[in-house]
Image: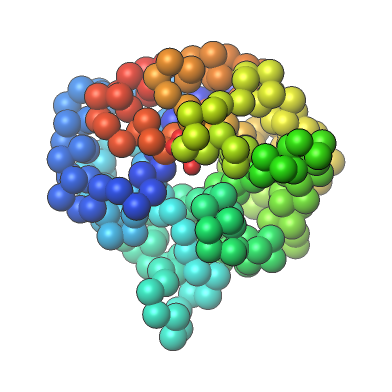
Length: 249
Ligand code: PGA
C-alpha cells in the first residue's frame, strides 16, 4: 500500500521569512498524519528554514527544486546535491517543465541530475510531461516515455525503485487547465508499465504524482483516479490555509 503523497512546489515564492510564517501556521493546523506524506519544495534559500521547522515531524519532508549535476565546482549561482542534503533536503525535483522549457534543460542533463541526487542520498522526483503541441500531435505517451527512459538511463534498478515520478502536462501547469482524472490515469498507467518493463515487479511500489493546476476543488477526484499516487501542487500550495485543505483530501 503506497501512502498518498502531497508535494508543494513553491517555485520562486516564499523566501525564508515567508516560509517560516507559512510553516508556523501550517504546523499549528496540521497535526501529524500517519496515512499520508507531505513534501515541501521551497526555493534553495528557504530549504534550511523549512527543514529545521519540521525536524520533529516524520510525516513531513523537505526537498529542493533543482540541483546541478556536479557535486561542487566553479558553477556560479548553482546548488549541488550534497549542499541540498546538508541544508536538510531529502528529495529533489528533476526535469520540472520550467527547468526544461524556460531554462533549456535537456534529457541528458536530467539523467546526470538523477545520478547526482543518488550520490548525495537525495530521492529524485523525475518530472515528465508533454507540451500542448505534442499532445495535439498525439505524441503525449512518446514524449513522456522518452523523458522517463532518458532520465533513468544507466541508473541502478534498486535506485529506480526508490524514486518518485511526476506527470505534469505542460499545458496544465499554472494555466488553470487540469487534465481530467481519466487523462491522468491513462498517462500514469503508461508510466507505470514502462517502469515495470525497466525494473520488473519492484516498479509497483513507485509513487507517480500528478501535477498541473491541482487545487482544493479537484485534488480529491485526481487522487481517486487509478494509478495516481499523489499530487504535485504549485500555485495552490502557496497559501497555508489552502494547502491545509488540499493535504486533507
Ligand atoms: P501549478 O504548478 O499547480 O501552479 O499548475 C504545478 C507544478 O509546476 O509543479
